[in-house]
Amino acid sequence: MALTWGLIIIGIALLLLGGYRWQQAQSFSRNSAQVMGEVINHDRTLHVEGRGPIHLPKGGRLSEDEALAMAGLPPGGRFNIESIQYAPVVRYQDQRDGWHEIISPLAVPSPTPAVGENVALVYRLDAPHEASLPGTRGWLIGVPLVLGFALCAVGLRLLLRGGGG
Image 1 (cartoon, rainbow, N blue to C red):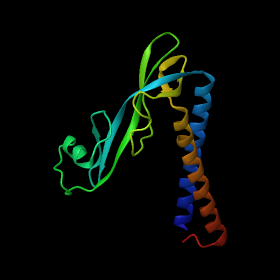
Image 2 (cartoon, one colour):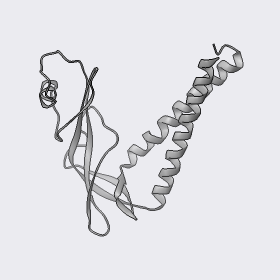
Image 3 (cartoon, rainbow, N blue to C red):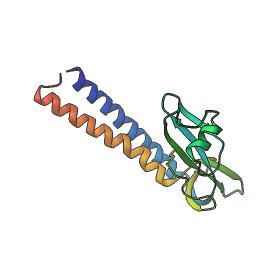
Image 4 (cartoon, rainbow, N blue to C red):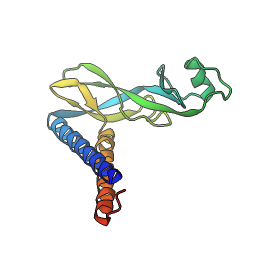
């Protein structure tokens, strides 16, 4: 029964998180402007098993040995690299001609979009340093909503079948 209620509680928490992020996105979009920005670099993070994320200097694609050397770890297979993640750094100009930079909250296994590529983003008119790439908001809202719904559905099914042991 504890497993069943645990699934339901975690599911509800994820649904609330997704709903909160959706509400924040709606508020953000009502008071924002869309502009084009340029990818100027990539924020790089090395994930090594048992060590957690290690932030590396900004730049392009790295080999595993280069990433280990930058992190101050010896190369040669002593460390199990889980991944090297790249998040685009985007520079944009607001309507008052101020320049700003943001780092995408979503990182991927390859440095995309490429440096020099133009991307659309939205920023708050009353706080131009607060911006987001439109594609990232869908992930930050959709993932908790889908997982929350799935966990609630599994928990409720177990509860109704009486097998929530």
